Image (cartoon, rainbow, N blue to C red; front, top):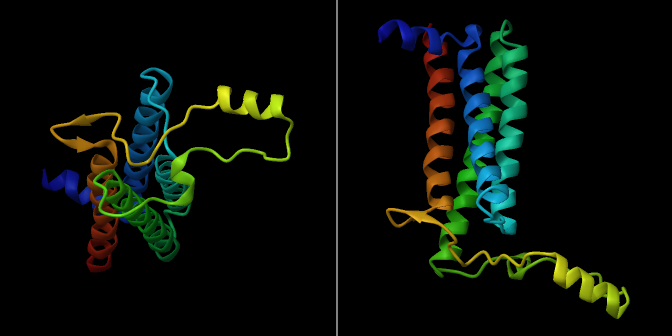
Length: 171
């Protein structure tokens, strides 16, 4: 176990960057599976949470590419961690909307329509888009929504990235 921790915390090995990339890819793949296989379309806050993973993946990929330069690796891995924290913040806001502790954004009521379009085009827009509200929980497990699980996963990834950066300073 100690050898595994040493390997992961060796920032120049690039393992932490790969863990961040693979974890993000897995979370995004599960979200897309829920959408395209399970038929659970995302609300706007769900989409924002996905973008946080995309950004975190981009920074983690840079950290992996730059892994031989300790300073740049720490900076890009830190930026990846900030992206995970941003995703956790968005997910936390989303949980608050789901619990009706506060209202969501104006986009949470469904997609915007092009009001300059003809009546036929407006009707087509309405009929062809799923209306997904941010305050409705379409799926949960043990009373925790997908946004709730996203908080846990994002915070775990952000904390792990920061821990590796901290431990690598001591090495």
